Length: 57
Image (cartoon, rainbow, N blue to C red):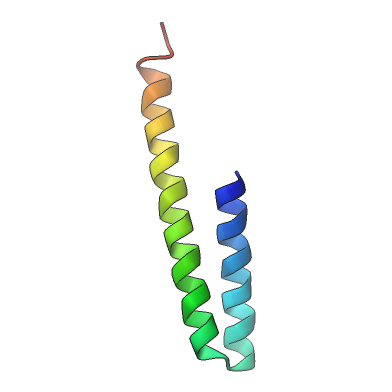
């Protein structure tokens, strides 16, 4: 859950920076949030597959 929490933090930073007009910081924060979210999704899917296959026995 830590990766997802950091992704949400960077998303909030991106939105706040966008509101105040800091487009460079907003774009960078959005990119970091997107990357962290994709990492979280990949880890979640891998653990879900492992939970249904290997750890079931």
